[in-house]
Each structure stands twice: as C-alpha cells, then as structure tokens.
Amino acid sequence: ADVEPIDLLTLIPENFQEIPYLAQINVKRKSMESFNSELTKLRPGTSNIKNKDYTLIYNTVAHMLEDKNMLVFVEAIKTVELLSKLIGPLNYLKQIKTKSWINLLAGKYTETKTAVITAVDRAMLAIVNHAYNQVLFS
Image 1 (spheres, one colour):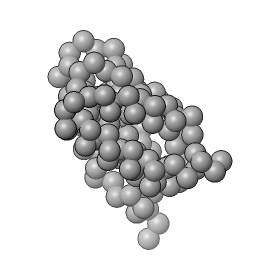
Image 2: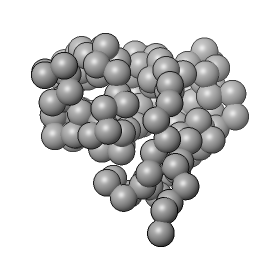
Image 3: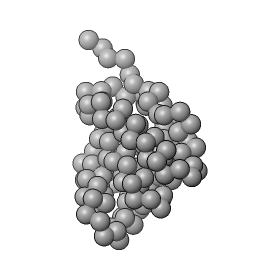
Image 4: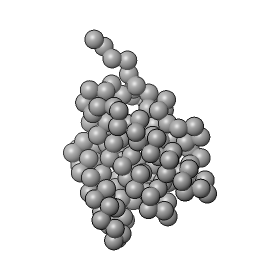
C-alpha cells in the first residue's frame, strides 16, 4: 500500500520558529521534546517523508544548538540525529545546513558533561551514516 508522504512541518509545535527567542528554558525544552517525540514515531527508511523545503526546521534547530542551556541544546542535538536518520538518505537535507550543524555539533565537544558528548556522538554518527554521503559527493 502506498503511504501518504509526511510533511514534517505538520509535526512542529505551535510557534516553532519563535522557540529560540523565548526566555523560558522549560518552554523551549518542552517544545523541542514534543517535536522529537513526533519524529521518533516515524521509522527511518519506512516513513515516506514529503520532499519539500524544511529551511524553517533546519534554521530553528541550528539556533537551538547554539542555545546556552544544556537541556535545550541536548534536545536540539537529538533533533539533528532524528532528522538525519529520517531525511538524510533522501538527500532532502541541504548540504549547507548539514555543514552548519556539523560545525555547531563539533563545538559541543568542549562540553564536559557525558550526556552532551554522547548526544553529539550519536548525532554525528547519524549524519555520517545517513546524510553525509550527499555532502561529500555532491
């Protein structure tokens, strides 16, 4: 049976693009967590992701990676991992966005918390395994 393509923009929480500019850390974290839980429901390779412009998501996630709060940026790191697995192989991840994510993630290796390093490792691995071929060879 043909599965209806999923538009990732329908999964984002309300006012998603405003999240980076909110002052309340809890609201930011909860918004990212709710988006991640939606992404987690999708299965890499089996979920049919609609091919469209997801710049809004990429940019918001990039801003969240730069957030000062660890709880917030760790959620954003998980988002990168999930998106890489879901849409990386389909070449919808724009190489310029992937490169900026890699730079932001690499900067997190200066953190001392194990949870951060583990999250970064997992996201980097997801990018390398699922999204990076397009970056290297396109």
